[in-house]
Image (cartoon, rainbow, N blue to C red; front, side, top):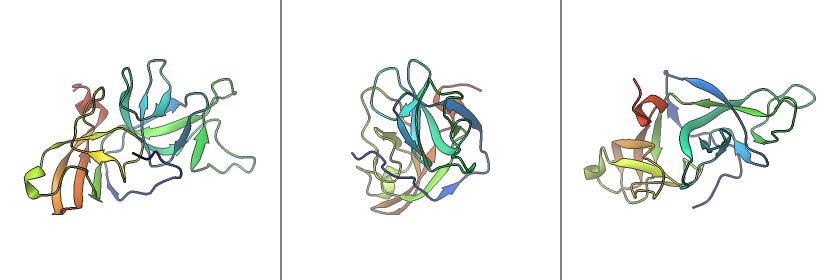
Length: 164
């Protein structure tokens, strides 16, 4: 599985954005459009199949501590918890639909409603129906287009963690 090396622009459908700011873990490079989790220390970090990593959602944009000298916000940021203010990423935790994405292990209409898992931050390449060892599913297949193209509903933070 390949981690992101640049910002992505997946085709998304979402009018239900729920945005939350998270401080980025030290030396962690995060990208706009990538899918991230929060580690046991409470910092945003790359999604991985790791104990004590809670999936939270996709980076919508970057916030405090991220603008360059001209005030422009970048497409990627490196965490520095000792900076003042420390860099923050604004994450959409409200769930959304990824349209027309490949899902490893899925190939037919019979895969509708299967759970989808992710072991990296790369939503466009690393979605799979194979369960991960330590992380819960992040969504489910909701539409079949072809053997290599599906729509995936990403779960909201509330749905993923059983909160009303």
